[in-house]
Amino acid sequence: MLYLSERDVERILTMKEVINALEEAFRSLARGNVVLPLRVRVRSPTYDGDILSMPCLIEEFNLYTNKIVSVYSKNVEIGLPTIHALIVAVDAVRGVPIGVIEAGYLTALRTGAISGVATKYLSRKDAEVLAIIGCGFQARTQAAGVKEVRKIKKIYSYDIVADRAEKFAEEMSRKLGVEVEVVNSAREAVEKADIICTATTSSTPVVRREWLKPGVHMNAIGAYTPDMREIDTETIVNAKVVVDMREAALSEAGDIIIPIREGRYSEDKIYAELGEIVSGAKPGRTSEEEITVFKSVGLALQDNSAVYALLKKYLKELSKEYG
Ligand SMILES: NC(=O)c1ccc[n+]([C@@H]2O[C@H](COP(=O)([O-])OP(=O)(O)OC[C@H]3O[C@@H](n4cnc5c(N)ncnc54)[C@H](O)[C@@H]3O)[C@@H](O)[C@H]2O)c1
Image 1: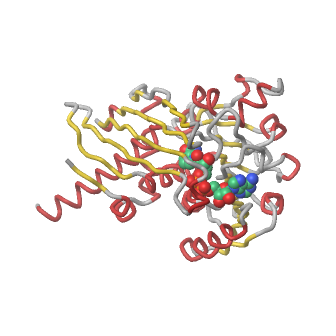
Image 2: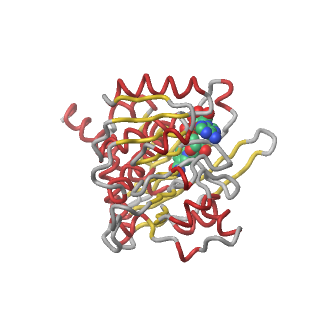
């Protein structure tokens, strides 16, 4: 059996490859060739952590994956990552296990990739200013995913812990070759942005409708429980809202669930799932002025397609090396 470490994943896989595989997976989903159950969440009340189990079968990839991912938001206080993950990959033709993949970085990569895909279909083509709210682990691949699909010239970064925004700016300006400026409030970053990524562990909105420019696109990836949210009700009510999966968003995303509870929004107002747009069933952005929001809680389909891209490239490397 294969074992691929965090370092292997970082060496082998690129953002572009994951974006391409993910688009392929969404088209496969539209053709009805994906089995994607809702994930199972087990909560540890004592340690304030969640452990999720995320299975997915993509028939066109002949691949079943199951990810065990833990989210412990207080880890960051002692210098440990918030997210740890492991994926088991199984050959879906015969049910034979292929291997185990350490998947903390892969999770960040596929989360950046879905924001890349959403940004490609929903943001203005001339978008060039990006705001990053929350400068932790995911923020890095959010910026990289957006940069892959749009010509970003400037990034504004904000975190409630100033030091994290500073570190992000120093690292990402070097890695992406884009000027990154730290600002003192989320508002300052958001008001200037054509694209916004929120990647916080916040339970209350970090973005408000009155701060948004016309035509802005937002990727909100942080909140993943009914009581967490990063976007205010006013933004949800006034935007074209696209989700990764309706069923998942309606059971997990406070950004959508809280406005519904308040009586200000309803399920039928969600414009589309991202897969419907990628497969061409519905158009993405249709005007330069509309505000678009992509709400992601994270799909096992993303893990499966990232593993598919990883294994394809790794096995190709091996066959070159050993003939
Ligand atoms: N949608 C998905 O597929 C997906 C995938 C991975 C992680 N996540 C979620 O994304 C979130 C971030 O994950 P991470 O690994 O980057 O965590 P992290 O702890 O590394 O980073 C989160 C950052 O947000 C900052 N923050 C918290 N509240 C804030 C606020 N009000 N304003 C500005 N900054 C604030 C923190 O200081 C921290 O730097 C988590 O909630 C995680 O569960 C979602």
